[in-house]
Length: 177
Image (cartoon, rainbow, N blue to C red; front, side, top):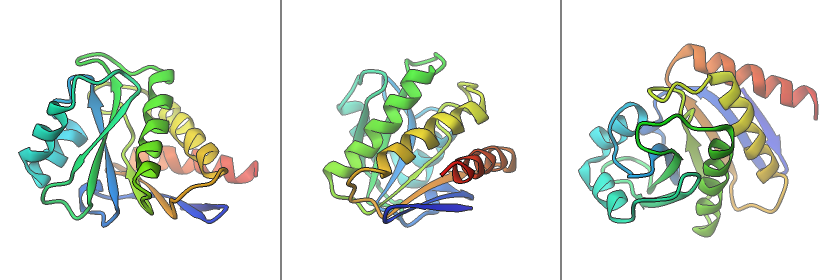
């Protein structure tokens, strides 16, 4: 499922974010930048502790911000840590929008061509998946309407339910273009 905005392809896929060969993958992060569970744990497990060590060295980070580390053993070059909430808290609509936007801005600062996101805050933090899809896809689409270095933006969702929710929202966006 994909959509092209200007010269950028926005895709929603079901798959493992940690296996994608993109310039950067995004990790859902807390303000302390500890990589404890969910997507962050998978990134640390496959990419190595160096990712978490580099992140923590830059923290704590304000909620809504995004910081960049190397990607260790992952096929990507960078990991962008999107701070959706304080440690142990649930993200808000505003914090999800801000950390998504700031992740895109960190990619732009490095002139990256490709980035892949998970569904930020929908795992352990329990943010509703369809609401997350509306927020994240809305921010990404707005960003892609301007000048961007990005040629490919992927939302990679591990489970089928999240994939179906994001696909539904992307279909609605396509219908309203």
